[in-house]
Amino acid sequence: MVVGTNVHPLLMGANMHFLKGARTCTILIGHERALGAAMKIQTASDLGALVRDRRGARGLSQQALALRAGVSVRWLKAFEAGKSTAEIGLVLRTLGALDLALSVVDAPGPSAVDLDDVLARFDQDST
Image (cartoon, rainbow, N blue to C red; front, side, top):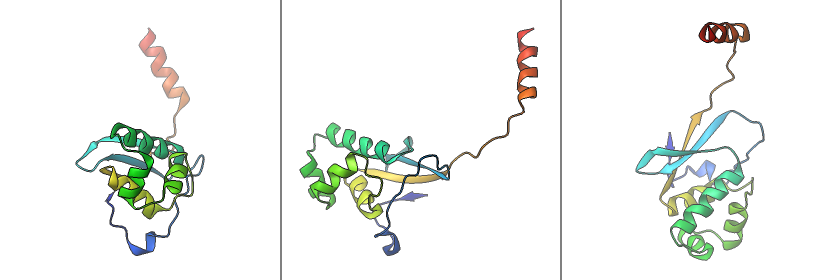
């Protein structure tokens, strides 16, 4: 599912909380036109760093991006620094201002590994 900059009104006031160790979903960020080149985001710091790097690559100051996205410079500075409670509506507007889209996919669940089976295959390969 790709979420653009048009956000359902119920989500506008929602906050994004990145919980350490939470493995319920993976957030992928990529160009709206080429989501195949997606980047895995696991923390608010990852997302802030991506925005900061993309802003720099585009030659935009924080003030210019804030104006383009309709956010305050203070909010953008905190977001780029990894603010974990950034408002989702503002995050999506900022991503949109950089021609980025957000896609959320299920994270791989914990897989049960039979260690005996792995070791048996390793022993077979080494002989």
